[in-house]
Length: 138
Image (tube, rainbow, N blue to C red):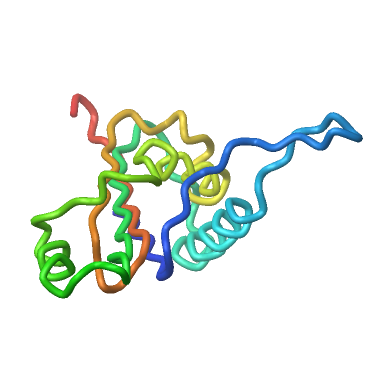
């Protein structure tokens, strides 16, 4: 199993932006910075290992900071996981940031055949990604 952990606020994949002068699409800077950091952390974890081959299972955890405006009671409930982050960023766009792991962990994220994306509050914001090869017939 490959385990990738990166401290800091999780960032969802932003919609492509367009330069009106050139007509070209580009990735928003906040997304690009997050994906660059994620790619770097993955390279450190992989330490030159070969790319994962075949079908993969992925579990993606986004640990989101509890809003500072919340009362101590509400904050405690969030940290106990009695309250979940049901606002933005949405889980789908958080999960899309795995594009940064192409050619570092696997050849293409199309190899992921099963997976889940989780959001929860934490007093230590971070992103955690767990990847494992699927067994034949599994």
